[in-house]
Length: 433
Image (cartoon, rainbow, N blue to C red; front, side, top):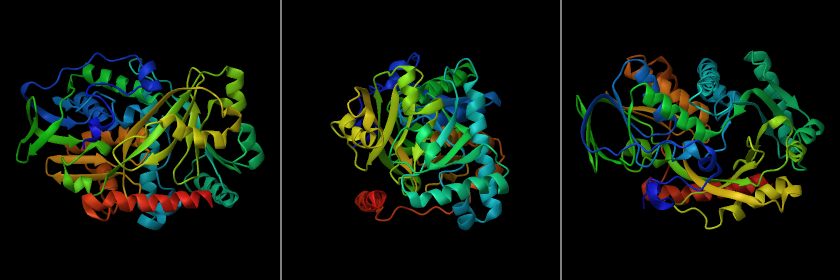
């Protein structure tokens, strides 16, 4: 079964709040016949669009192929949170990789948020960057770590945008009975992700990128120039950049062994009035909690609660996504237990064993950057800029990620999904203890 079509029709965006509210792009034609270029980018999400944009601005001739539509995958379906740091906290990275490597990754993470903020200011993007993300602790035992971590970033990393939030203030900011404290990071933020993806596509198109949709790559032949094949034709390219994330399939088995697709789900409620919104989450902040299967939520520009939570590890989405997501939403906000849900949708993202991005050269002129593990709005956008640098012969920032040890998922293609399900069930049980 193909994840590109397991839950979605060919060439059609999901019935999401984002698809309903982003100014649509005119469809791009499929590949028909032969194209020749400097760089072929495979995948039209944040990473692929950013790669194509930065390459074109540097003078490269670029073709971008997407199997469905630009922004169709996780880039157009996620929670819209633009988080600082990596998916793994700095103290853990210091233990895993050493202080210098951890500090280099922190610097890159800061650059990723700055890049999203700067790109979103372009009038073609039409997605406002709203500052502020709360990390909310769902267990009292996590609060001391949150306080220590904020102090660590303040004193050791010189980052003054994050501060500790105690239980009383947390209840004022997030009107929920289930949180005991956490942090507030005003250097992070949130954005309309599909509008951001569409904006990147407009910028890339205007820079000269040839974007071709409904052009699924079926094979590649390695060599001094790479032949990239689709059902409609082929692209002859000096370099190929893969930005497929959870939708890679069997195109690059070496990458697929380390980056696994999982599904996550989001709902959008009916609009609340601004006073009611402020009574749920103050100051238009986004929130992500401390559960292993994270609950994440924020308000849209038209005052809907956008709530994400629950995961699944097979191909199919649940038949009733709204019902599945309402459970954690009701637990966190019992005052909204009966609020109408206008949109409910799922998406597929790519995760790695250690939750860090996976950057790999598959050959001298084929590279893959993926596995953003739910932290992709900022990191995938930066990855595109880094991929463009690598094509130009500048590998410094690429190598900071490529040097992170990256294990394969155990069990191989047939067994890794059942093994992951067993592991996730254990973590889900831990969340309830």
